Amino acid sequence: MGSIETTAGPVDAGALGRTLCHEHLLTSSESIRAQYPHLYDTEREFEKAVEQVRAAMAHGVGTIVDPACMDLARDARLAMRVAEATGCRIVMATGIYGQHYTFIPQHFQTRDEDYLADAFVHDIEVGIQGTAVKAAFLKTAADEPGITPDIEKVHRAAARASLRTGRPIMAHSRPASRTGTEQVRIFLEEGVAPEKIMIAHTGDTDDLDHIEELLALGVYIGMDRYGTAIFLPDETRNAVVAELCARGHAGRMVLSQDACATIDWFPDELRAQLAPKWNFTLIFEEILPQLRELGVSDADIDTMLDVVPAAWLAG
Ligand SMILES: [Zn+2]
Image 1 (cartoon, helix red, strand yellow):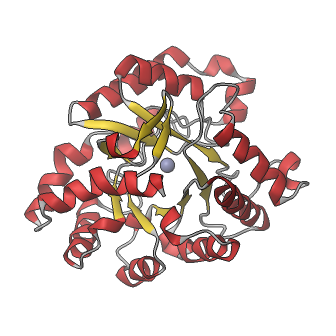
Image 2 (tube, rainbow, N blue to C red; image 1 turned 30 degrees about the vertical axis):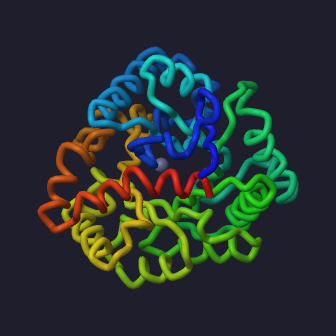
Image 3 (cartoon, protein in one colour; image 1 turned 120 degrees about the vertical axis):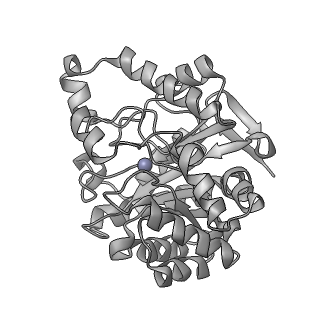
């Protein structure tokens, strides 16, 4: 296996250890943070990130992959600080989430895919936000609005940056409208190999036909939103994961929570109401014992948490 970029520099892919493949140190509204900073307590955000990372480490986690990118308030300096404070390896991305999964700002709207790809390649080869932290992978997103022209541009740009650098891609998807199929089609059209692609949030559905359709394309899938019953209850997520393991697909899945140590999209009280168990440790505290009861083997659990993240990141 090759080496993987972390906030502390490259490490051997075989040394990542137990890995949460999709968690967020911080998810925040970039324009509001920049213009109304008094609304934010950045020290408290740092402390909450450290608390969550330490809690995960207590369950043996050695690496956290944070797919923050543009529009989610990605912050390389915060990630470096958290990594230094905790000793956890943190893996960062480059890419664009899209505003309301629909638009990108005018600066990128009026320029072509290759201009976007250049920006992504800068983060991979030079560093993120003026730091030496290099992006280990690319991030894109499609959701309810589908593949709008701007969203297609981001996917094509990410694909081209992947081809130029060899870095893999993680794509936020919405299985309820099967966006993953379209996203993979664009990546493959651009020439990206399927094993470089991870379709995040595939675990938001119990539509096994759709999941099998994605797996048949050769991509990895993220069963990565445990704790978000607003998309699908954990009980249903578990049944899907157990069935896919029984069908021999553990080697194509990762387990994670998409939890955010801080998220400013809604007031804290609303978050507590909507997703009370949504944190970096739910998998270890509740989900793994439930999966074992459903017949998922320890070997399959190790594969999903220890092997697949490194295999995907190493391309
Ligand atoms: Zn996410």
